[in-house]
Length: 105
Image 1 (cartoon, rainbow, N blue to C red):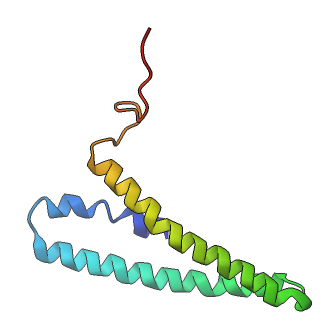
Image 2 (image 1 turned 180 degrees about the vertical axis):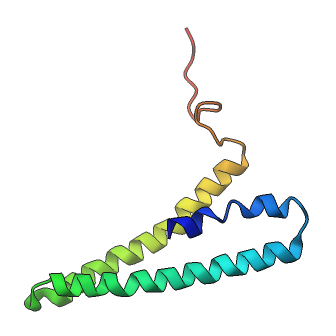
């Protein structure tokens, strides 16, 4: 999953060259591969959770697993949007532009 996600920022290099058709082809390819990888990872993780739980508590374990999955899917876009806004303001490096400036005495 990480190599697929890491390829998204590289699309900006292609987009700067004004190659619109190539950008769309690469974007659709990356999105399709992301969906395939996510589906291939989700099913085995659910099987592992079901096999590792005691048969009397499978329902509770599945409930906790689904709750944590939903919580991460809820928090993910919020955190990614905040990071995106922060990066667009030019605060890419904490060393060059710290978020909290300390006074020099």
